[in-house]
Length: 150
Image 1 (cartoon, rainbow, N blue to C red):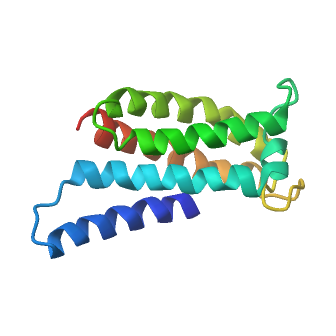
Image 2: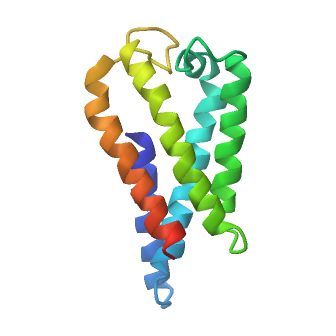
């Protein structure tokens, strides 16, 4: 829920700031900025809640903490890349693929009731997916609209 709030808040504030400054709002830029900030915000969880995030990684994947750190760095770089004109479209496609590939980790975490903040198995469980899957689709559509269609 927090990443969605960050995404929408940054989009709204950046669009409003453009309007107040008397410039025509570049909604594509505002959308990419919002997703970039959201990705960087989400990346902070990889470093703050490493132990809980590692519980989201399926057992067959080794070096769970390293995977968590690497994906956190990827999110930071992708967030920045969405703002760089020369690479924004390939980065947007990368983010779309990345979001698709992360969905199984979210499903695994829900099946195992992972609470990433507490690093335990007392989370919401499968009911969380009723929110998470549509949210993931929304994020993918957002990146496609603002990053690819630009």
